[in-house]
Image (tube, rainbow, N blue to C red; front, side, top):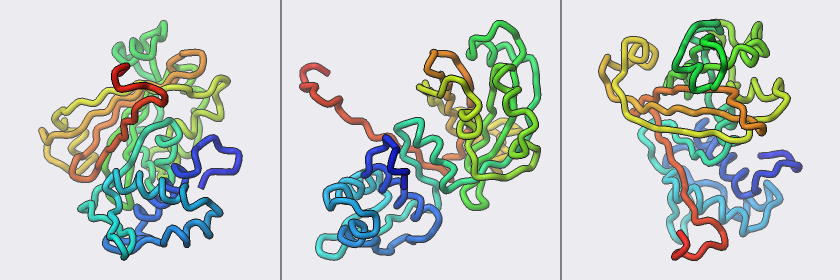
Length: 253
């Protein structure tokens, strides 16, 4: 659960906690979750807050409700499920997955990455990592930073080749930034796995994978990280909840 000073809504923090418990196997497929009364007592929350957390988990398909019997863990066929709607949600990947460094930090010429990071030079810092749910890899990510950003993490033990840790890259990076990460722009496309992706994820060359590009900007609108990820669809489910902005009438949308 989030710390008392966190700006994260209590219902979302509870939903994240329950999601993490399900992901780590504390609550297994078909098992009944604690009742609203139990969770109200455990986390010192109102019934309404607990109920809202359950509503979100039901909408995501993580759990299902049986009237008069309770709330149960739904079957996801072994996939890793993550609900993403904020920078904090991306950082929360450290709750139930691990990061494995495939290629350590290096400085290289990459015109495309340099252009997207809006730097004046052709050189960027780059590393590659896999993310694991348990022992199963579900994504290969290539991370690019401006050189001055990459220097902030050079020598970090978490970034040595073969190192495994629960951290996220933005979670490691942000404490070193003068201006914190504020926004993330994202694009999603379907592509075919090349040799490197196929080897890292254990699939055949040409297998369809989900490519997700995320460009992180700080509060000064400066690009601090470009992450290009390739997700194995058999092992990963990505869900986003879209809500109408408060106060807007349907005719205004």
